[in-house]
Length: 303
Image (cartoon, rainbow, N blue to C red; front, top):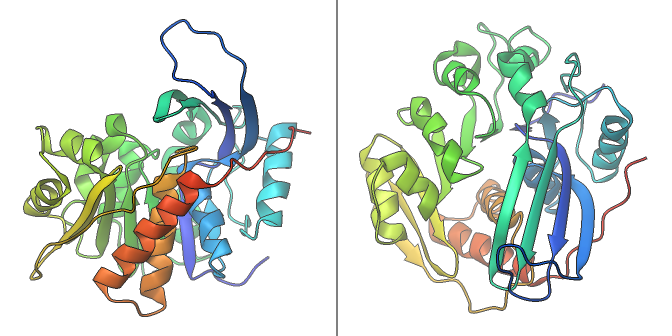
């Protein structure tokens, strides 16, 4: 068993299966390309990126008791992420994410996170039953919260005293799951990392740019909000502070899956090292740009 972690990523841990097309696709197209399979999921992507920054993250998620699950755990550990607190009591297979990318970005994706959804609040047990903390001795550290968790689980995190001392980093996972995060909007220790589309879903209206989006979510009660908008400027709005904005460098994207997770990890790592908000935003933008311009890393086959 590892020592009590100071950083926990809570949410999706699954296999990514990503097809890369060399040409722009239309509906029904059938083209030659590359298909990579590797560990993924928002929480795990962030954890792996944090490990690359020299930190020691743990992950709490649901993983099936099947051969894909065993292989996923082994590879996750090899990537520097502790897996001591996984929930593995469900009957469902290990979760899976499938996406197609082409020049210009993501074409389509499907996330099968039924195992995580079936676990529900049960995956929070290590933070509630005394293994990592409880209501009288809350765990004290940084908790990255992934919007793939169920609404019930997210609402429990918002009100449970077991999480009173945690510094929360909230990431929606996708626009269709952004509304799940509403219970956490008033949490004083929560920092929202979202893109403009997710901000629009949470706000329920169109937002012109990252500045308007960040200030809209801030007005809904969030203590601090960081909004990205692809190649357009990213912005941060916070209580009692002026909104800041920075423009990403112009780059040619080779793949986009996980860019937001790399952004969050770099931002968190920068702030943990003492960076000021503008410095952390700059480092996060550069990390995301580096991620999307790098060659996709081939994954391993499931054992």
